Amino acid sequence: MGKWQTVTTIESPVRAEIIKGVLEQHGIMAMVINKKESVYHIHGHYEILVLRDQALQAANIIKNEITF
Image 1 (cartoon, one colour):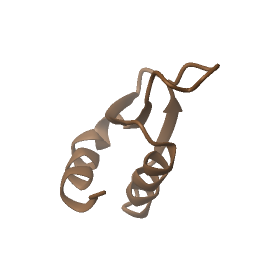
Image 2 (image 1 turned 180 degrees about the horizontal axis):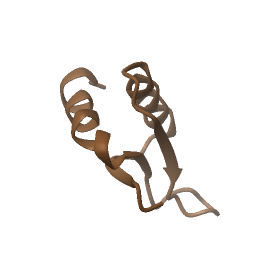
Image 3 (image 1 turned 90 degrees about the vertical axis):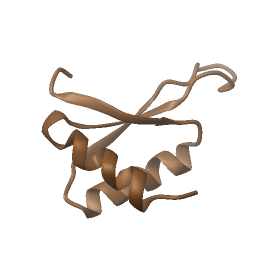
Image 4 (image 1 turned 135 degrees about the vertical axis):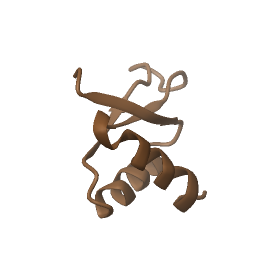
């Protein structure tokens, strides 16, 4: 996964998928990685990763266009 970079982390799986969808609408390939522990799902988060050459653009989209 050397060509992928984490652009944000979030607690909610629904919000992670929304961010992924918005990025994909802008032509940015994204994926969500579940970093929650597997038994109780209390600890951990979801990481949104994009290709390194699109990381700055993705971060700007997340910052300026997505609010919860």
